[in-house]
Image (cartoon, rainbow, N blue to C red; front, side, top):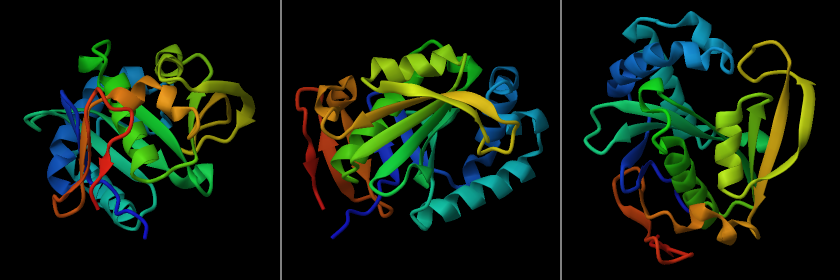
Length: 219
């Protein structure tokens, strides 16, 4: 039986949570503060800042896809869940048995290790709860900050995809393709990040501390 997806993932500093409508104002504030940094890599940033009502529509759409076990896009929050620090996603376009990870961090929290921590948490859940065989990360050529996260977590650069269409509708671009296989995951620093994962009703799915390279799936 397949494990239910994690709707909430907690680390020492962060809460990764499936989007809900009440997070729309937090998302609007984080995106508006980060527009200039996002614009070279995310074409949707050109329309920002948008009113909260537009972010409300988006969060409802993201929740629907999550519930259908399609793309899972998590809001990344501080421990008090008062501020949105970024987003991290597991996308289905990588194919069967795999997911593609995407992420961005608010400019107000860049350089604090947020991207590495949130990516690590979701990598751990994806391999240990979801049973992935492979995870991909695609990074626009020149986006050294995002590429450094992939390298730090043990991903291998497979090569450069030239002039590929952008999933966000922007013009074609060259992208670096990184991947991490299930067999390589235990050696990744992500395998030692403390996490707790909960299902849609708040039941604990998975718990692991920094001293175990394999946690306990509780469902």
